[in-house]
Image (cartoon, rainbow, N blue to C red):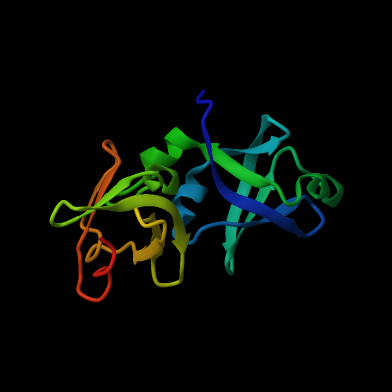
Amino acid sequence: MSDKFISIGKILNFHGIKGEVKVGYTKGNEDFLASLQCVYIKIGSDFSKLNIENLRFHKQFALIKFKEINNVNQVEKIKGLNIFSQIDLARNSLKKDEYLFSDLEGSKVYNQFDDFVGIVERIGETAASNILAIKLPSGKTALVPFVNELVPDVDIKNKKILINQIEGLIDDWI
């Protein structure tokens, strides 16, 4: 079993009195969540496995019943904790042109003229698209929508991202 885990959601509260939990997660990951048989929670430095008995989606939340959790009192002990999946499972579930945020962070960014632009510091989420926060050599941070028109090529293996320099968006970066 892999030692590496990735956060896939957070236990927000209980749902009902029989141990079902309300989990916040990133939209678009429904198929991945539905495919899981178990998840992990981190208590201190240890990961504990929780087996999924039932999972359904309601509004913007996942409602999960774990085999090990049977009442509200047990939910209170894990409320507020992140849930994790093995990172290899998450990577294997990705479709073409999908990436884990952790794989993008630290990537070097170049424009279409092969000029170095900066390094991906973090990835943010908006309703329209994900956003690359790129730390520029000047120390400033530039925000670039992570869409195919602006980011046509991502090389995870070499941690290199190509962006299209579009007039008005990144003219003053370099």
